[in-house]
Image (tube, rainbow, N blue to C red; front, side, top):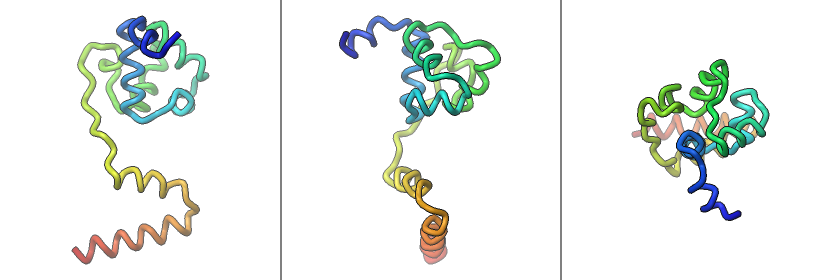
Length: 115
């Protein structure tokens, strides 16, 4: 089955979860780790549209950067701005060893003080 076929067949709740996860820039695996559930749970919610258990919703909302109401479709999700080049660079920087991160931070701080 093609990806486009899956998108059309998803219930509204499932489609909303997929869109919120993608807007947050997370994979199913990353979201599962942030929420503390199995990846199969994320996949199930995104395919079937069955809402997560009540105790999972706050962690899911926090990981996605939205309210529980937005997940449930009570309010529209707040728009997520696309990542800027600078945000992407800082995310890549976070994966570097601490010493290199510190050097980058010092350069950025010096540039900010100079402007």
